[in-house]
Structures are given as C-alpha cells and as structure tokens.
Figure 1 (tube, rainbow, N blue to C red):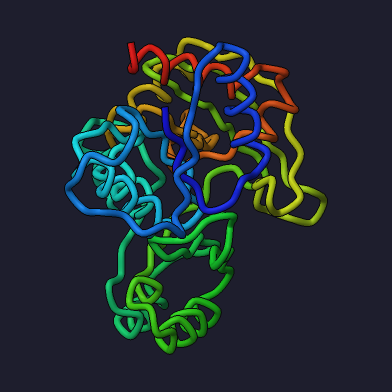
Figure 2: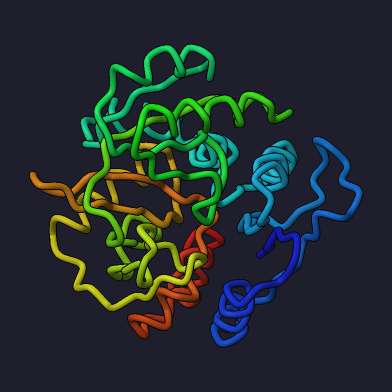
Length: 275
C-alpha cells in the first residue's frame, strides 16, 4: 500500500494508524522525491493525499503510468479540483447544482453586472477553504471583484462562476468511500460568517446519512469518478444541491463530529482493492 503526500496531517495519521491496526504495511510516497516516469516503482495501490492540487493530479498520473492504481485516479482529481468541470460532470449525470453563470473574461462580466439580481456568490473554478469566494451584494461590488481578479497572473483565477445563493451559513458534508456513504455532518458558519467551512471557523454536528444524502453523495462521487470523496451539499428552498466534490478530502472535523473512524473505512477499502 502507498500513501502519496506533501506533508502528514491528522487525516494521514488516522489512515496510517488504521492500516497498522489492520496488519497492513504501507509506504509513504513523498512529493519531494524524484520519480521515474512509466516504471514500476510504486506499490500496487497508492492513496493520493497531496494537499497541492497540482501535486495530487500529477502524482496520480505518475502512479498510473507505472501500472499501479491511484486512489483517486488522475481524471477524478482533475475534475474534482476544478469547480466548473465538476459542475459540468454533475449536470451531465442529472444532479442539481446551484443556478450558475460562467464568465471566462472578467471584463465581460463587468458589462453584465447591471443585468443580474443580488446577492450572488462569485468564485473562481479553483481554490479551497473558501478562499476567493465572495458574497456579492451589488453590481458595483461585482465589477470591482472582476477588475481585481483580472489583474491576477493565474488565468484560472480570472474565470468567474457566479451563483444564486442557497441557504447561507449551513451545508452538509458527506464522505463517500468505495460506493458507500461512511458519515455525514452538518456544518454551520460561526457568528457573522456566511461560509460554513471548518477552515473559516465553522462548527459541525453529526447528521444521519439518510437515503437521499447517501444517494446524492454516491452519485456525485461517481459523476467525477472518485472512489474517495467529500461531497458538499447545499440547502435550497426546493431541496438539496450538490456544490462540490472534494477528491482529496479532509475529514478530521467529520471524525470529531460523528465519531466515525473514517481513516479505518478508507484503509479497509484500500485493502479490499489490494486483495
């Protein structure tokens, strides 16, 4: 078994501990190493846990070039790390996402700003932990954000996904592993914060994985081809929407909220693949 990583976090420690308890050996594959492309230099199954989006995608591709199996695979990671590609995959599978518009050019977005109704959510297709996600309350604010983002060097950050907001400050995170919804929690933003991310100081409570939550989570993970995925769902007036599929999911907060040993669920799935 292999675990590809940049640094060891609480999640990787939980997975390692579970593998040890199950009597499985593992090898840590650090992204700082030099890798021979296309040669069999990895264990048969490698779990991709790199924090960097680029590192995770490239490590999965390097592992696959050697003939080993990457979990998640490079295609799933490429889709999951790009919100626009994720939405397109979800929509093709008939899953509901928040009502969205896409502007590939911030200058064009400024032209259309007066035609939209507010508030709106604006975000680039890449990024995590709620960074560069804005709650926009006026056309002037949206135009200013577009002008600022247009000055950034990364072209992906100049792309805008503009969304009609669902219920603010509250969402659901479910973790899917190998076709099974392992655990779910409801996240709530701290006072004065409309985002519910744990990285933004949000809190979490355990949530029973109902048949609807399980179905949505598994279909969303399947839509991007992810074997291990953290699926984020939003509450809308007419039901739930799929908002993100995290293909290198953090789960420390989920473990703390639910008591479910997510690390062991992942370890057991890896061992089932190895067998």
